[in-house]
Length: 480
Ligand SMILES: [Zn+2]
Image (cartoon, rainbow, N blue to C red; front, side, top):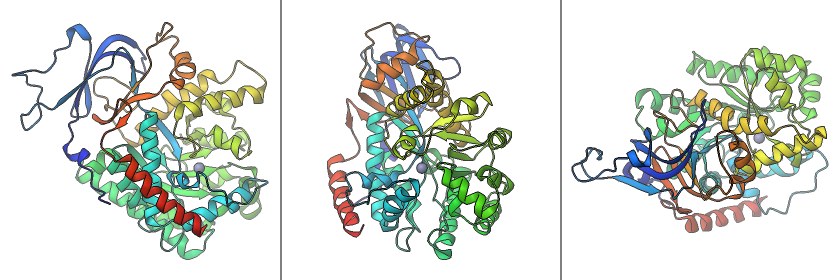
């Protein structure tokens, strides 16, 4: 299959969305009725009342570089237009687990890893990695998720090296933004552990080269990198030291952080204390792996001291409530972390790509756990619409993701939602949780390129891709 996509090179990234109910988000969230958003070269340049909009016409200077008119004008019909969502912790490769019935029943987290995920990821070949990413991204576009921070594993000699390149191809083919890493682990022996380090370093170098030397390239726009670690309990200190040593050789100014499952289950703490005489976060801190570009996913079984270390180092935490419920591993104390000033974002851990489903589940789990119907609404909503943009902006520096304002990247979605009760900036959270969450996304735009319009993905042959994905996933299941 041809992995070159014309959309990144040829499609216009000039758009005008008119007749919109614009929810700007950002530091000063406003709800603007009957407004238009003007996007030039992928960046929002104007937000104006409809009556003041100057539509491009004959003799207009709002033209493409080659001179032809290439501005797509979308009439939003009064529907809600807002920034695309960001998913701060995802595993694309999990797509091919959907419908798999062969895993043995599991009684705890360690058994879930052994009976399902560590059996599945070992069998992934490069084409599986490509298609599992592509189908997840297609669903993300349909649900209005425009930026995804992924964590990949395919530990075999035929599936590991080149896997990030496959996912990068899927990302560039589909036109969303993604931050990728490979999950280093010692669970499969020294050779594959070394390959895990090399895969991360190779991809980090690729992203560095493009972002620094070719800032207008598609890679520079859409791709970012982290160094992936599975979890403390599966990586020896020797391997972690090797990883950070090699990383700092290519990244002496510590621009790249780690993306690591952190105290997701109590067993991570128990094994780490038993083998290394340390708590998980203390261990990561001692190895200089925390910092403002590092993500600790889950962060459930933490002591106060560990939270303080996360805060002190300005490390990010990503909460994945649906996954935590599904695996029955516990409930992260996001309130305490937020109170301490830790940046807590929201991820799905591949349970869904629908960020509003994750948001709602997150609110409910904290309410039932605390037996208090008054908690979680603001914290979880802000994790999604305020904190996830802050997380993404630590990687896409200076690009203003997650808001509609002049100078922000045009990652914009239109919901099929004409508010039937009053919508203002004061009650937007309620509309998001109870109204927009029940509406379909009509249009998804990333970097000014319209990827989906009227619920139809324009640049990808979804039927053909699904057919190919079924073929590869069936072979994968046969090998499982
Ligand atoms: Zn995960």
